Image 1 (spheres, one colour):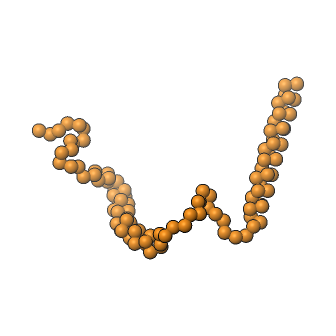
Image 2: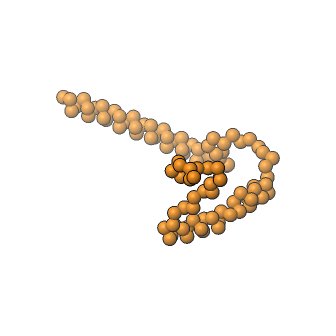
Image 3: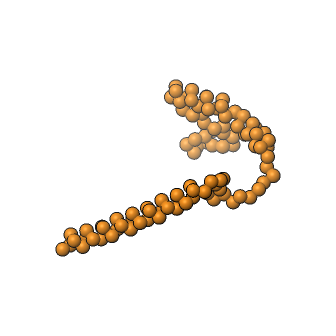
Length: 101
């Protein structure tokens, strides 16, 4: 008896899931049936005056040393060297919390 009730519940859940999947598939087919540009998800579609040349100039400045830094990091990793510590200011205490006297 209990098995019969559980089986009916599971059957009902499976049917609901199949129905949900069919609806999702139909939505996908409807979208795919229309040709043309697709908006990005979450894309507001606002226009900007920013140009590709500005992107290129900015990228050259921001990422100028990326290739060299990546190569050096790969070399350190290959030699299993630790990462270099960031430069410390003169007034900053050394690691460990105590100042040298």
